[in-house]
Length: 145
Image (cartoon, rainbow, N blue to C red; front, side, top):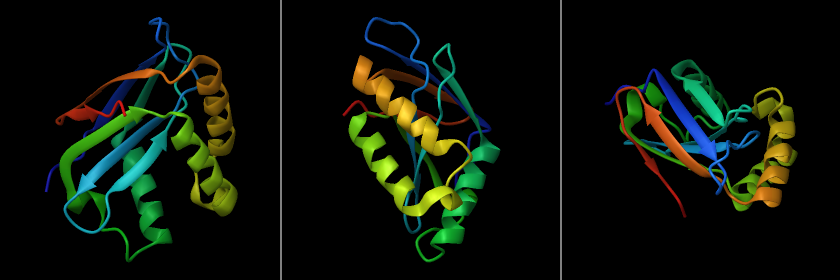
């Protein structure tokens, strides 16, 4: 069992290097039991940055367990120490909006639907941004696919 990072820091930018505000970051926490956890965090601020504290990860993971207890093991006990992340592109954002429409507000943080819509508009207008990430105590692999 590996410890979750106390916080993760993401910096998102456009192709020209300018900060990418209003973007979402897709983060996958690999586990050694049951399913991995995959979340979208955001939106990024005006400077293109996003900080995700451990408490937010645990809260989201516990909500997944509440909705599907047979599918997930508590993240604190199952986390392997491996994290993958990417700046959310059109495909990820469109799927997330479909899930939001299906499950509604009960399964998502406040403002999530509006943040997804704004992120999708941004990515459609400016293209998929790039991501730099760091975390306390573990490495984050960047998925550029």
